[in-house]
Image (cartoon, rainbow, N blue to C red; front, side, top):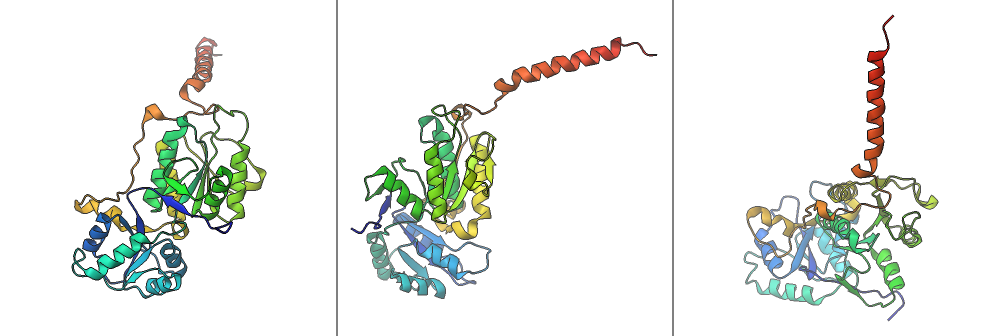
Length: 317
């Protein structure tokens, strides 16, 4: 195995990805999507309502194990990449022998590195709800999984945590860096996060910076990146989705499986959702909360009442 031969296996209902490439006026073959979904195949495609772009299609196709459809660009890219292709959606996907063979070939083919986003941030238990918010936002808006080093949802062919981190950063579609302080280090930035952000930038990865408590930018080398602040996990989830949407042309893809539920189907590969639980809310050691600002507010209230009283006591001349 060469030093850079890195493999990632991501656990979940989706066992493989297939690109569905359709001409502009073609209807989505939903029966085909349903059949592939039952087989544990995620059906992805180009972003809707956007001008065709070969570089974007190449990015999406390169993360797949096969291509179906009549889109000439996608079929050409599949030949260049050496992945299986199936020219036209069949009339009856459930019994078409060629499609069954195609699906079998797709499921046997394992990409060394499937598309994913990587999370840099606190891995402690008290931050689990925030990680769930970020993961749900990434998977629903970008259509790819969100991984962190010890999430238990992936397996690599490396044992060193440091090496796994480096390679996960190198191959990530983009990086979400959450820099909220924790009780384990309430007064200073975590140097490991700074190092990981630096590695991501060195690999020219897109990086989103997040933090719960407003403060100065933590590292002089990233002052040109905008920091996004959040108060609660539902706000965090929304802001990550908004960032992905703004960057969608270079990081996102359409997932047809997610759209099956709208017609009453019960897909195997469902669009993740996030429900904010106030009881699990994370409050950092330097995060201002109502209890922490209560005393200053009381003082201001007393001063205001005192000034009002003076107005009534001072005689009018």
